[in-house]
Image (cartoon, rainbow, N blue to C red; front, top):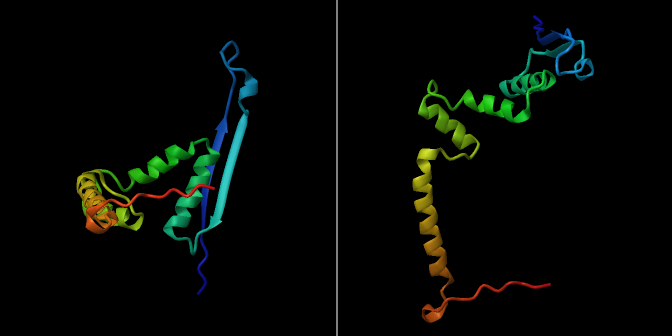
Length: 132
């Protein structure tokens, strides 16, 4: 048995100028038609998102809005905190509510680094800057 599938994103737009408005007809294309077709039999979720990102760029979305929209699929009130934390772990992100604990860890590491930098008899070793 053979399985074949395709996915299509289609965008059609027409612009009819209204004379006397502030825009010139040169600022717009009278008609736009985009059709993006891809084989879908073996696409994974990341490939689908990449395909949809290309489609959204074609229709005029800015990259930062696309990224924000993608993140909103994970970080919203309808996704459990457990699922959000899985994504954070996968991409090495820190949630806002965990920043206080991270700050405490950094302080402990900094204090340990200062302790390790002390020379014999408790003197502080100087950091030598190499000059070229």
